[in-house]
Length: 205
Image (cartoon, rainbow, N blue to C red; front, side, top):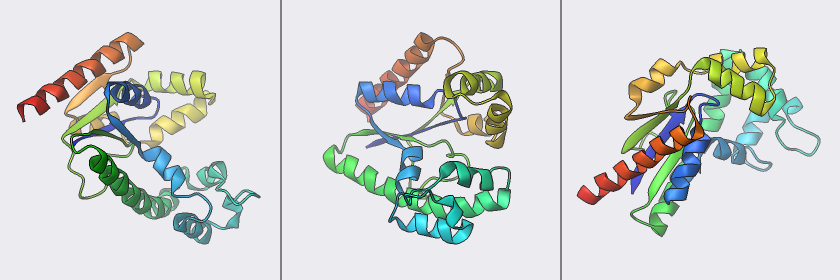
């Protein structure tokens, strides 16, 4: 198996890069999707969240009201730490199972673990990445995308970007940086070059 850690700030183009790698044959594991799965009704993590933050974080149908929970933890470091202490271990466990499945199906699989909080250490301790890829875009571009593509107002968008770890910390751990501030074609060409690099490395192994 060849394991890629893909990270980057919000609206920095991670999904675009991940989709391109999947088109080339990679297996994509999305940490954000797993974070949603582990808090579905009936899951232990959801029960612990209700214990910690109260029943008001549930909708009438018993599902997690992510917006309500977000209001509670956003800007409150202690509350966010409590939430992470519940969700991150569950995501780690599920990640491990999915990687094991991918390897069982194809021992030579290229697995892309798409994890926004890689630098913040929400990654299984036993994971050893062969390559860490960081998608990078200026703050103004991230804010613009959040406003135009996700419908946030500019103040919300700026707060979302600023709440994450700075780009300097991400770039410090990067083996490869993909600049997504240009055209889509430019992003794709960099991703294609990355895939060729991976193929060459594996052919030499």
